[in-house]
Image (cartoon, rainbow, N blue to C red; front, side, top):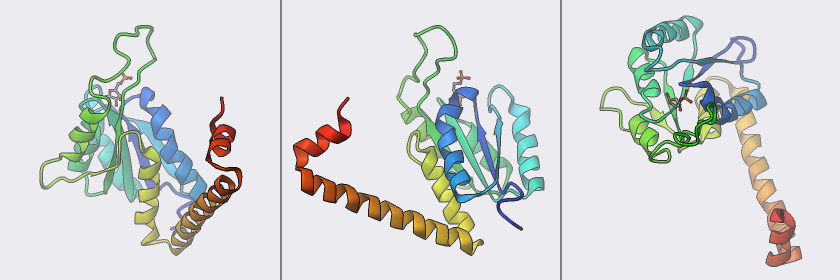
Length: 190
Ligand code: RP5
């Protein structure tokens, strides 16, 4: 099966407001040429859809589900409880600017609420959890899982690491050349 023809990864999130964070996972998958299917499934607003989604994911042959949610963040854990497909959870620091009110824009605990909800799944129904808002890492971890099966993806991951290495060396050379004060001014000046 070709990973660029049929979606092997399902990306789900609890709300459209999560898409601002979750799109970073999609960017990584697109960069590696891995097809994915993206949907909104809310654990508390559309609870019955959770089971339907798990059935759908298995029927489609997804190999990984990336699930992002904020607040009490039940989506990743509940998805994992409905399927054997590995679920990577992305805790989201809620920043909801859909409405006009400034009052409830942020979640009360700055993402720690979602981090603990997702990572502290009781023994028996694990969810691999990335850091708060680290959807790109969920994308990269997905690549690592798929690379066990697709050697081409393993090569792409190696290249990705090499590029990271090169870009640090390039910046370090520039810092050495300019000196710290000029380097910082050039790079971060407003
Ligand atoms: C969670 O509640 C979602 O995952 C989202 O992070 C948060 C806020 O949702 P909205 O009020 O923006 O729809 O279910």
